[in-house]
Image (cartoon, rainbow, N blue to C red; front, top):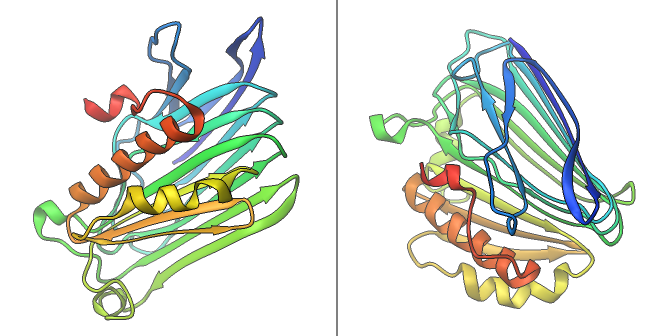
Length: 269
């Protein structure tokens, strides 16, 4: 099943407003009621209940000059086992000067035998700021399932004014179990989170972020490359990875953007 969403936000009369909305196939967008002091929220829902081999999803989000928006998902996204075809997901995020975007979907659960190809492209004009992230669960840990075979190809591309400034690929294929258990691999962990902050002031927040992320119960790290700050978590308990990621992004948005240290309300439902 195919699905496509196109969202565009602009600032009009001092407030961010929805300027364009296109929905097709298995993707829909909801807009929860927020107070006058909160930024606009968009919640993406997959009406099919999960992704299977051959599904193709595309999400395009544009934030205009000085507009502010938060985009999340209704629930964890499940990628089911495939008998052959790949599930393909493309996320394209664009920000104009002065814009602020938070791309914060809930976790993606990769079932054993699933085949997922996902690409996240973030294009930020100089003067804009973007917070983006993803949480990945390697198997259904609640059922004792681990990701042992299939395909996970996850790409990040961050552009500043159209110039590539950071690229990252995670590729797991074939005998995934050995890679997951390797001491130089994932050391048996089944949950990972990635947080990306793309803005010209990214280097300023590196040391503060390293103090915020420290947690002896999992593997963590923060680095900064040019104008891109990247934080990562790797742990044995997906719920703990999610909790620590959530806590970090709340503190980060408050520290950097002077917004309340909160997450989308749908995360707590």
